[in-house]
Image (cartoon, rainbow, N blue to C red):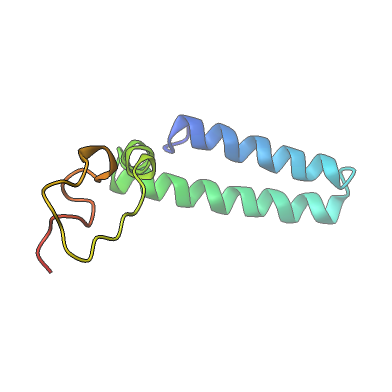
Length: 92
């Protein structure tokens, strides 16, 4: 959808239309909201061209909670660990 991820482009369009609707389609407000929606679309397009899988990676990343373990142990459950490469198990 214009170079951006389809789900995010549709969500951006929906939010833009709802913001215009909430102001009663006032000309000044609608122009501002549409300009903001276009800028957001260009940002989404840039992110999608830079890394096409960034949204999917963030969905996986957000499933795992941050767990602070001052001293890692073998007894730590794998259920609460982030996948390798997500700021855990990496040397500083």
